[in-house]
Image 1 (cartoon, one colour):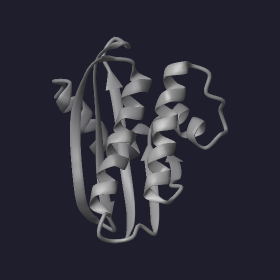
Image 2 (cartoon, rainbow, N blue to C red):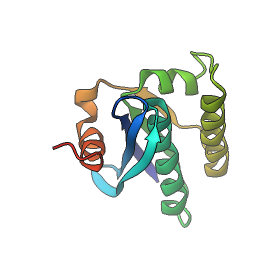
Image 3 (cartoon, rainbow, N blue to C red):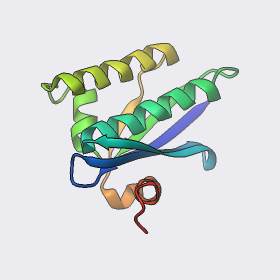
Length: 136
């Protein structure tokens, strides 16, 4: 199975009320989507939470069929560069979140390809976050 994930996270007033979202596709077919309120969090925590929730969903989706490839798309340049090793992770809380992502990668048996896109190319995930935060 080849999957593509679109994730996003956002926080009002950073930190403030936060939410995350994900959409998971197999080809052009939407397999799963969610938006989750996170309480008071930073924007970066919200971004990582979207990916962690998506990877957890992928574990469930692929329990009966092997995962061949996984593309994770996000508009968080910081998260993408941290997960690919291009940026060093300095903040202890971010280190814990990245470690959780890497544990999920091991559980899935695959290292995803991480891709940064501009917010306009991540509009569906961004909309889900906005809806969870009460923005129209």
